[in-house]
Length: 399
Image 1 (spheres, helix red, strand yellow):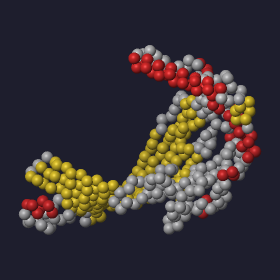
Image 2 (image 1 turned 90 degrees about the vertical axis):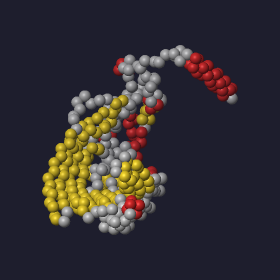
Image 3 (image 1 turned 45 degrees about the horizontal axis):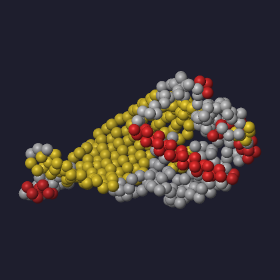
Image 4 (image 1 turned 45 degrees about the vertical axis):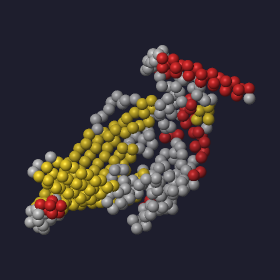
């Protein structure tokens, strides 16, 4: 209690001193000069006990190569068909890398939890750096003990040692088909379909892997279809109906235009963590008719969900993602209604009513892939992945 009393008194005095200092700074903002940055003043001890990031002195320039071949043909009656093959290759893609991780020779290769190896690497040993590092060192370096796995790292005197490597690459192939109905008889229609595959090698299982792993890209969308069109309603001056009506009726009935865009796109591949799976990965996927918000994929296909049995301090082997297990697909309609009214020559009034996601189709978030939580395999989140229906009304006078 006496010590607590002294602490309270000291805290009160300190707060009073801080108040006086603050008041002095208001009256003379230059009473405490700005300190110069230390830079490398610590010499060889600069950033010891902290994470550092350095620039690769031999960077490579990432580049993309693209090639394509296609044809276009008019089919008659205003229809034009376009088909194109498009390929792309990315080379020397930059990958972030932590050079200061536990070497793989110390990690477990067991397909199940290796508690003996975990205990060995996490065991506390006497901290050889205590009292020797600068004041900015993180807590892991200032205590009496330190985990054995930290002392086994290539640079045990640092936390993370981050740099960039440039051995990432990617490749993409697609067939892109388009059909367009040129504007005539008051309307135009355009449809496009893309069939593609996007692979990448820009990630590693372990930070010290010699090469990145080849896997389906998280940006892969094998199917995309869009249909768009514009229709000018046949009313008013120069149109099929009410062409000879008086000026007032013609202005009210004419100038209406309806347009819309429909979009469909495959969902993104789902990312999985460092998990234990005892089964056939082909059984994880559920058909579209079987998928629900509460069960997006087969959670009982072979996942070990016991928290106490999860992997740690091991070399990962389970794939990052699969091309056949994906998040929700895009199924969206955007519509707009436009009214153009000519008041007199050179002066026009335009009204626009736009309905984004007009049918209010929700895009579910990616399902949870944390095998130890109750919502594993469920596509639940506080917000949907797309925006709900939006209605925009715009009035514009053009002169």
